[in-house]
Image (cartoon, rainbow, N blue to C red):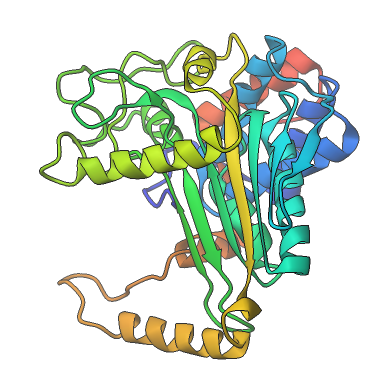
Length: 365
């Protein structure tokens, strides 16, 4: 989701290509292969352009900590096992999650092109960027795209006091057709993504009620400006079941089953590796479905457009004049940031300056 609040004082806008090149150089400096560096920098700049500031340049230090600790394999030998014409598993060999997710989605797309649908569950992986990138990848080729990922020690089960799950994000993208509106849902199954809390804390903003259990104090950042694990996040819907917290918990568990059990990854391993000092054991689930398997794509596109028109023209609450379709705010943000430059807030700029110095990149920031 776009971080739509006012940018903090001292924010500097850089050309998108500059931020992308900087990210490329960061990963190249620690031995990540050239093609992988290109893909990683593309995913990170895509997040910043689309207004998902928590998953762009803000993620550089997160990755560098884990690469520095030796818990990510930057030259993996991934193995894909096809279980049927439309399903398979990928052992990522502890790869960067962006690299394994790309391979998994390509395998899913290949199966979908031939058989109408394709689904791949991934094990032994790591953080994969923002979920929406992978669903969008399928959508841009005309398929329905599905992407999910799990984690550990971030959010609770309903009535639980211990952080067990990750924020377990999921994305579904449905192409709307030429010159029309796509549907692009991208969400965490916790009340908020970790990166949103990190962004708020870095910018000195108060954490809204309902993001974390009331029994805990304020969450905090460690010395690398990464969220500590001392305060759990709540499932979507909040505490207990009176406001639907059990539904968010159910969605989180669903994501974990698809990304974990189907792939053969272990929850305890993910919980142990969450802090970045041992293997993360992250799992993903990627899917692609051909529209033609249902009806004529043009009919689907036309009816989507009609539905969106009905939604947009419906009555609005006082003070609001527009209802958005999922994916529109990110698209508008991308157009603005391509024109004005990618906003880099003071805390993230400080991290980039530190990385620039540590890695001897030689940039003027």
